[in-house]
Length: 91
Image (cartoon, rainbow, N blue to C red):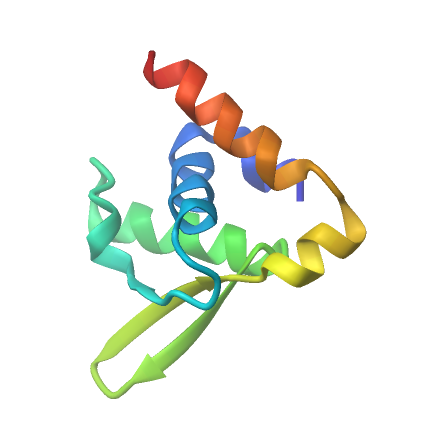
């Protein structure tokens, strides 16, 4: 899980989901990552395999959601740290 959060783009995705209301589903392209589609796919796969996010397919659209309860149960305070880290990095 920590390896998945080592990348600033992935931390930004998680922070965006943390700040959204619980249960929010966001399209992968809505995060505005400054990377190619292939790289974006790689980042979301890393987050999914680490257990940080889940994905739901809606036909030709895929939405991402935060596995908030699972993360907080296993690593209390981790999500607050991610948000603080992203906010500190953005200045």
